[in-house]
Amino acid sequence: MAIQVLSLIASLFFIVPALAQSTPPTADLSKYDYVDPQREIPAKALEKALAYYDVYYNQITHKNYVTVLDFTQSSNNKRMYVVDMKTGLVTRYLVAHGKGSDPNHTGVAKKFSNIEGSNMSSIGMYVTGSEYSGKHGRSMRLVGLEKTNDQAMDRAIVVHGAWYVDPQYTPLGRSQGCPAVEEKHIDTVVSQLKGGSVYYIWAGQS
Image (cartoon, rainbow, N blue to C red; front, side):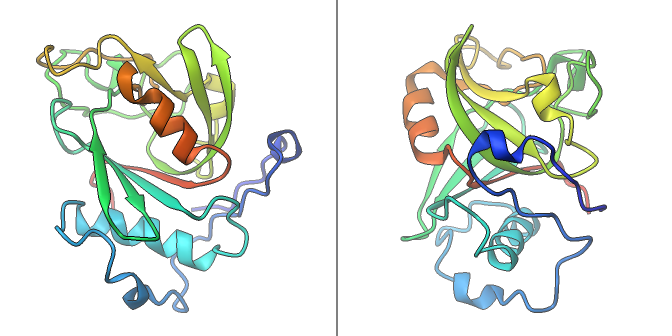
């Protein structure tokens, strides 16, 4: 994965660490054995998120949380995992994927894109940006760090609350590519994660 140069770093008021082409051998993940004690998060996805967190620890502005989204799961599963890095405990949330990623509305995302107008979700490593109030109310920007998601800011791929993210809908509704969450949880999610925390969207890729 090529290192991405982000022109809008200054406007976000924190330094976005570069994404290395592979996990450096200096990443010692044994120190994170306390994380996810119930082993809820897919091991490979968690390993990638923690490796990034560890390697770029000194550059990461917001170290208290690491988030992993597992888009191999159906949308009606609580597939957004927020890890408290102080305790290792995990909180799970429902999260939507893009309608272009699931054109038949099966509840499972099958296709991903970084292209404007695709209405697809974009996979890969992100850091969270600032919060703002937009058409969906309180929302949080995402800064993509890979070729698979480096257009997230231009595409306005953000975390916001949505009425269609609700367990009463099977499958959940779909977004235009944003990882939307239940409206009742948006205040907690934004308050905890905004301002430079690791945010990883995984879809079973190597």
